[in-house]
Length: 215
Image 1 (cartoon, one colour):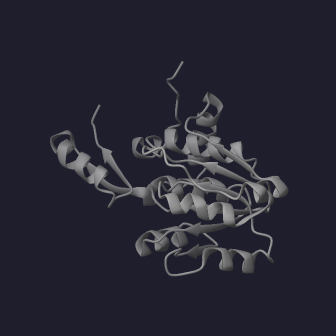
Image 2: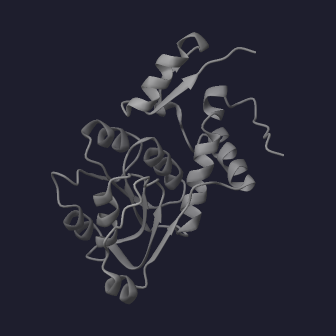
């Protein structure tokens, strides 16, 4: 029941992204992203950029926060409306300026940096929702203004997996060309290069490293 057919129009390389894209779909559903809302994606690594691709299908305005200049460039290239370096720029000031002082309606945190999560609470609009889509293996205690969360009726949730229907939707978005994962393929390696490929994938200097195979 976990084998999914994919159309001939999708390459094996594109099909390899179906699972992470389906997780992004699940993530955005968790915070009920609505038409024409303002979305902040914290982190422009592989999962942040995949969230960006899916979010573009939902008719939202997208802010991306990321300290790495090359990743910011990639986010802009892939359709972000605003890209912000939170180290060199004032994230809250920029977002409030472009949202007429309201803040963002929804936020997805894909960066494991503690400060990244804290910053998301500071730019939420009233009834704004945050989804934590990253692992915090050190199990940190993140400070937050509980009174503001209470008065603004904010929602904080998390997501990790996906449903079967999310997976089917991911395949459909890729096959329709609504989500283009090809810019996220940093390198392809064969079985004889698998150790080098694993090192590259774990280095943090690539987006996705694909293992090529022949049938």
